[in-house]
Amino acid sequence: ILASLIKGISDLKDIAKFRNMGLRTIVIYIATTVIAISIGLVLVNVFEPGEGISQQTIDNLSATYEGNSNIQGKLATAAAQKDAGPLQALVDMVPSNAVAAMSNNSLMLQVIFFAIFLGISMLLIGEKRAQPLKDFFDSLNDVVLKMVDLIMLFAPFAVFALLATVVVTSDDPEVLLALLYYALTVVAGLISMIVVYCVIFALYVKKSPLWFLKQIAPAQLLAFSTSSSAATLPVTMERVEEHMGVEKEVASFVLPVGATINMDGTSLYQAVAAVFVCQALGIDLSLSAQLTIVLTALLASIGSAAVPGAGMVMLVIVLESIDFPSDLLPVALALIFAVDRPLDMLRTTVNVTGDATVASVVAKSLGKFGKPKVKDWDDHLDNVTS
Ligand code: ASP
Image (tube, rainbow, N blue to C red; front, side):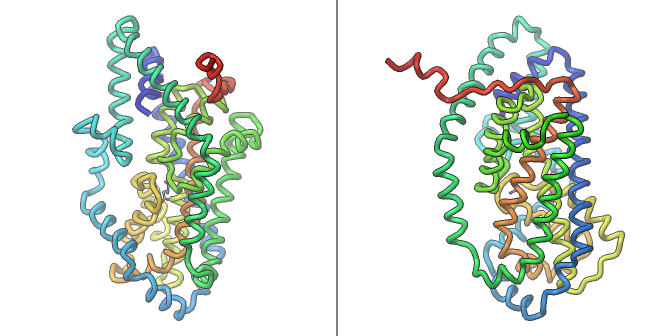
């Protein structure tokens, strides 16, 4: 992120262009997230997956999961996040130690902040004087992308191992069956979002959506198997830049920002899950409560970390915003916990696809959607082997 973003910004030549790109990115990210939440709310209100859940199932799920340390941990994290207040996110964006931020995956926004700051400062000292540093980051970026190519050679085995772990540690099929209707509602919403992206891509970028899905597929597969947009980010950046042709200065800003703040799949899931638990527990939701969900799920997806299971932590905050009884929060999480991992895998795939779509749209709007320039891991192998 650091090398790619610094290189991207210092290539801009004009800071106004950066402001332009930043504004577009944020506005489009918010728009796609609101679409996702609305789709989730419509589906959960139409299908009402919570209505069919019997008291017996609720009791069984609560007995099995309520004391689960994972659920208790999520409740504690949500409480800490809420205590910190809404503006804490802004404070957290500014690194007190940039080097320390780079060694912590959860501090990606700080790295982005630092990279933008450094990139702008490089612009301000003039091209000639900034050139050595620019060359350094350019070369570092190429090396890191080569490392991604090499790591991706192992991806088929790694993906197999990750998925095997998920299968063997998954819950008893009977529990999963009780939640099938809920899970299908989330899945229907997530599939609709992929369709929305394809339509946006076809209409705005004017390229085949199938081509788009094919180029982004390795990143989707990695997102699916790791359940982490952050872990997938290097591959997303490589696919969008090299295989789709989005220029570096756009991809290197839009994608890391998207991995941290744009989570369409997560916000859709939060909307469905919040209404689902209220339906199952017989809590009536007024129209204004549902509108509150749109706002808080939007903020919650911005605040969710790009790591496995983060969406469920922020779901607690969504529930609290609609005055969900706090003593029932552990029951609410217990109700959806059993199917959370498979849904996490799917929503992360949607999150990553959303980031790639928005990167393409922003690039197209700025005239920065060029030709793919695929680099293979062994491009220079002949030069270094005898
Ligand atoms: N795992 C998701 C991501 O990394 C976040 C979540 O929904 O839990 O994008």
